[in-house]
Amino acid sequence: MRKKRIIAKTLLLFLTVTGLLFFRPVYAEGSSITVTTDINDLNQGQSLKLDLYKIGTISWVGNTTPTRYELSNINELYAPVFAKIFEGASYMDIGYDVEQQKMRNEAFDVDAAAIECAKKIMDAQTVPTAAYSLTIYPNTPTTSTAVANGLYLGIARDNATTDRSDYLKKVADGGNERVVSYVYTDTNEHWFKPYLVFVYDDGEREIPLDTIHLKYETVPFGDLLIEKELLSYAKSPVTFVFKVEIFEDQACTKPYKTRYESIDFSKPGKDSVMMARIPMGYWCKVTEIHSGLIYKPVQGCENPQTVKIIPAKNGQIATVSFVNDWGENPPYWSYGIKNVFAHDGSGWVWQDPHPQNQEVHQ
Image: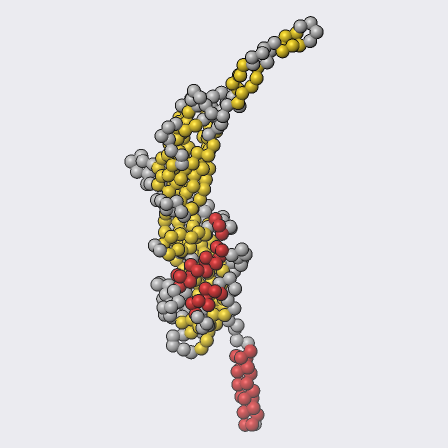
């Protein structure tokens, strides 16, 4: 009897152990991410996206001090960035200060690596599809579903934009160049930095990245007023067209955008057109590129004109002015021939041996 009890206890212990081994809950690899932003001037119905592009896989190396993880399966688009950082090594020192976004390994500059990866996105002919795309609302924490373990490039954008040329740009930063994603509202342009997002959780170890707070710089908008005066007028309506080249610098060597505006006239007088949503401190080079065939600038009126976008203060606004005149001797005339014929009974005969030029306005 005693022998049977021992066998029974042994069997029960075996079943308990095997049950724990084969029927324990399976841990889902990956971690959730919460994203916040305090941007407060989005337009009605406007929201943000945070796109996460997977750079590579993160796996735990083993018990080391500091804890080390291996970055592998790096997307070929970003591989040159990390080959330069690691100089052939495949290990990263994680021990990572979330608030400061800084690694223990000081050679690994998180912000610089994120900028270099964002440049790859800008320059690539084909960009990988974002592995995750999270919709973000102001002052409302957004928590993702489980994100697979890995290293990601995070880029914020307007929910409505899809073309990277509409939300990524390179901007000067002292003697360096960085990449920002930009979001327009009715009153401002906001610049968001790119992020490197570390995700690792295997149930025992976790990189402590719980929340991403989207930081941004605000570049206020200004306006440009284009004034136009027409001193005299021919018979036909005329349209004056202006090319507005916007630059980041006074030397006009760093182009931002180009726009076109026009003003119509059907009589002498003054008119103007206002251009809004130009980043404060940028420079506008305005060129009148079409002024009709017979109108020319008056003496002293420069074309093109360059002006800096300034804050709207005390009624001041960045302004350029163009004045055109028809004049007594307008250019670009053509001439016709006036012929006189008379009927002499047998046919029409040309009578006038001295044709008169009649000015005809084309």
